Amino acid sequence: QSTVSFTIPPAVPTGTYLIRVESIALHQAQNVGGAQMYLSCAQVKVTDGGNGAPAPLVAFPGAYKATDPGLRWSYYPVPTSYEAPGPAVWSG
Image (cartoon, rainbow, N blue to C red; front, side, top):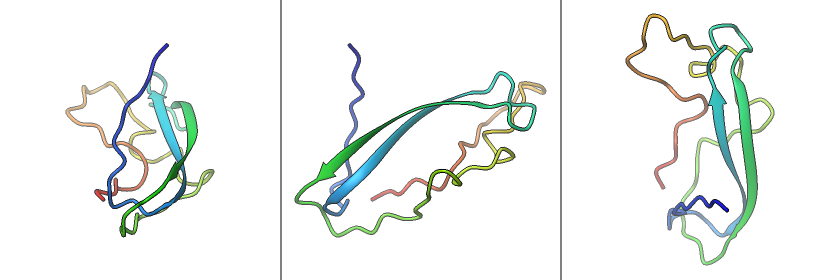
């Protein structure tokens, strides 16, 4: 059995949300479309939420393009950083 613990920011408004967790295998990502996505989703209901306004919002499919940084990537030359695909993370 394995679990993933995380904190939902207190500013998240009351509502139903889809939490998406993903791993991206990059061993073939030097080729367009070579990144391999492994994901899981869970639906959660937030009660007694805050007054925040999460943004930016994206939709799946369509949030990523095969040419986005983080999905088109090479080991050579050895990179010094990695830019994850997708929108900026909302700080809440």
